[in-house]
Length: 221
Image: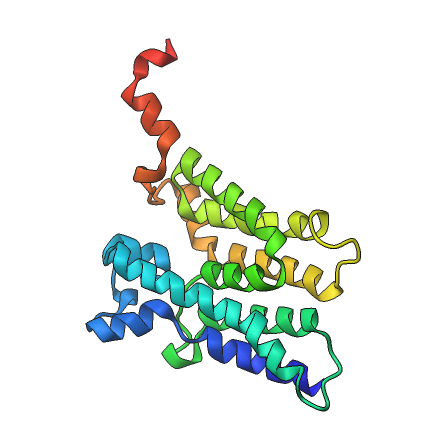
């Protein structure tokens, strides 16, 4: 079981490399002092611009993929390794998400974990990505709420993991789906509270359905 501890430790340390905070230091800014204060891609896009946000997403998704894919491959080469790839990948991938949310390098103040979760799933459970992205896009287009879209996309991981995965799903992947959905709900609890209060920001440029009805009100008659 030593390799399980190593997988968690390596995944957490990889996850703690926050894309927005690393790139922000290179530009002399702290993303946590801007906009919503969240060290994630959405806040980076709104406050710094799409080029900066793209770099953030690449790093955050990449570290999730590295944790879930590269870390297990290395650990399986150890002479005492007894666990399988899915178990080590799930452990390291989840630890990377935790590291992103509570990064040890940045005083445990990070992002919300969505990009890193996508990176981990892309390696260890790629069949979950299509329904996840579909739910995210539909929710964004219909409501403009990025937080709500991420929560619903996170919840979609659970049924997708079982319904679209292998017939004999490794228990570690089932646990990973539930854990990722739970973490994403927790990290977006503030978004839920603001939606209930009516103060949540909308991504209006992506809210195509409402914009179309507003542009052509005669269609409603």
